[in-house]
Length: 186
Image 1 (cartoon, rainbow, N blue to C red):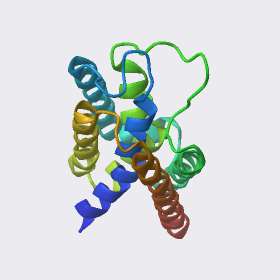
Image 2: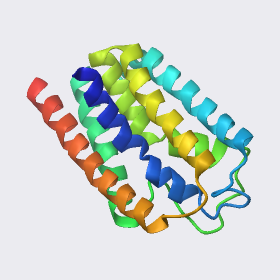
Image 3: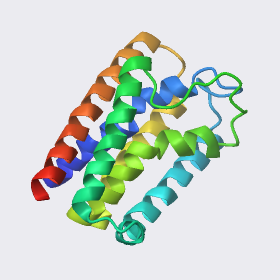
């Protein structure tokens, strides 16, 4: 049951439909994104998640935060990303003049597959639920997102937009749950 909760948390934080929409229209990317670019982006995300779960306790110690306080901070990050996604349909910035994609590192690897919400959740849950269970929950959705991007041909954009926005709302619910559990523990 705990792993199922982690799957829901990381589904909401990574938002596979939002990843598809954010990559749509990038220079040479989106539908038909080269598989090497996708592999590099997924690889970077996996490395960032390993670092988040392995160094989670050290990160909190370095910031002089206890697990409960970090859980509340992670909730704020998740809520902000969720509101942005609910409003715009995509989990990342779509600023005009955004630089060309750097071979999967940016923006696919970070901040889309391993973004602020998913990394904050990884640090928070790794302390409470265990490192590798948390890592497994995140990696499932990194790989699913990479597979969907590799197979996506640009169809069903309206459906992806709707799913992404609902996923943003789910991320707000996850944020509320994180905040409440952090406040209860304090």
